[in-house]
Image (cartoon, rainbow, N blue to C red; front, side, top):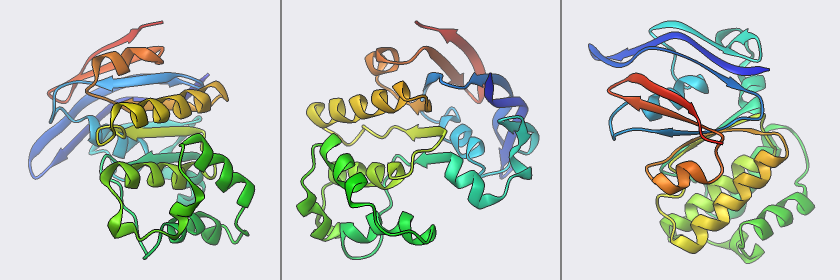
Length: 218
């Protein structure tokens, strides 16, 4: 069953065509690697898929309904986008972990927090750390934990392991694979050829804003 469809989607900015008439279907439970040269429009594709940007033309359908017909809060809970450059706020890590609960008017789920910190091999003492003193890799893992406290149906990842060493890269890959095994649909932009084939069942290649191929790899 299709969870995400792009139908002749184009996007232009400042008179430049970034994406040109993309049409493809993502099925629920897919794990899709998105590859292609830098500047080919891959990040824009994810921003359109999460409705952070609107297409210039064409239609984007999520679970049978146009993205523009969704309540924004409902959409944010169903589709989660993790940026290549993590954006942390507040003074301490715990401010970022508390936030998803505050906006839902819920109490912090200590068990869930502990579970995710353990999965990402991070000690709970990080909660008290100053966000400004974290390394790029630590910020990325905290940003991922924040996004995953409430599991989405569709998880969009934009080069989220680019700032990580090989050990932490593997930790993140294993967490994402675990989420996929639970039925979450994954779209992951990567420039790592081996990573693009490691877990994904499909690979979508974007070149110069156009869909070059959508191939089954498993």
